[in-house]
Length: 91
Image (tube, rainbow, N blue to C red; front, side):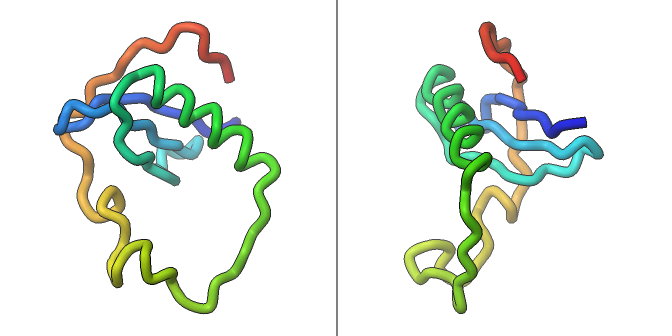
């Protein structure tokens, strides 16, 4: 069974999506998007890039990324997830 993209509204009223494994494990959480359409475009981009993405090993974490910590989305759960209906999205 394939993973699932889940589109939701976070506590700051921004749209986000997460990629969930078949066992329910959250594998990735997106950045906030200003609209549902923008989030759906983000899902399409992830689908396109992940299928042909290369793996690059970095010796250290890039300085401009997490500034010595994990990404914010991985540190705290996103409260008040409100599922949204997505028409026209097929797996």
